Image (cartoon, rainbow, N blue to C red):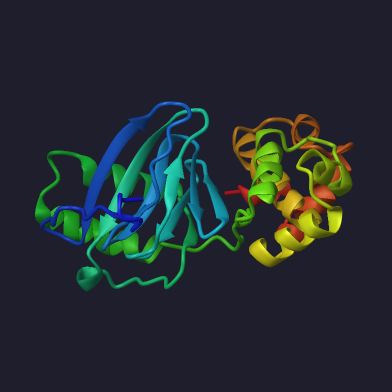
Length: 255
């Protein structure tokens, strides 16, 4: 955020065609402040896993996935374990595709190669235009929903939220958390429902599932993921994932 509380705005330079590419190596733990772009953006990692947070939702992107971010949408991008990120910026006036909301995209082998073709120094403007026209035809949404939840504003609820984000497997119950922050369980429950739109239990589930996504993208065994994020058994984790997301963990990142 800027000093006056407004989101940072980072316009990409204009290019000879609709797309402008930027790339960089992100060290582990790097997060950009919340910001927006006047252009549409496709956030994609050529290597590693990046995470994009938009309005409480969390999109985790291995190289087989990218995220369409419409121009003017506030978002926060980072990586837990390091990544090579490509930011693909699209001039809305020259882009025939327009997803009105953040949308996860499948990155096929062909789309991957076309992105790399457009970043090559030897690619001419005419070649770029031809490649971009094919890319627009290949932007296929992946039928998944974001995982995550808004943070509460209440200071006491924030302390509970911070503890669960630091350790999603924290087994404490709502009354135990309430005692730790010196508030009644009923007041804490009301704060989560009023400020996040969901109950404390639903909020905890979303945070646990969100914490599992980078591990899932890194192909960690389900049994280890379940334990890391607070589920007693792999089947309990899989059931929670399917109930909340509408698909199984194994299919979430399937090509």
